[in-house]
Figure: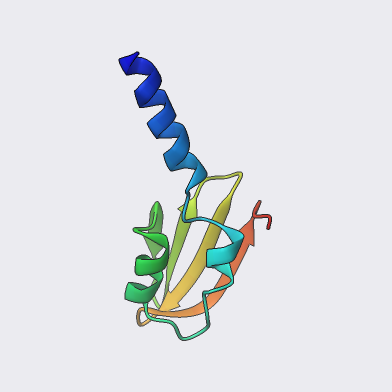
Length: 83
């Protein structure tokens, strides 16, 4: 019984992912990184480059990728999101 409750909790968390089309539509150019993190949570992966940072929320099948310059959104894209 305890295992069933744990599995149900994990499935409900996966269904409530912040990586969604609805949240993607709330992202805007110029948005602060802190505001993005409030919307999506912490990034799953960030790579700092010389002049910008690329961050990804999600995995290979479903994700939102954002490029930040001075902690501001300059470019963003999605993969695998549906309404």
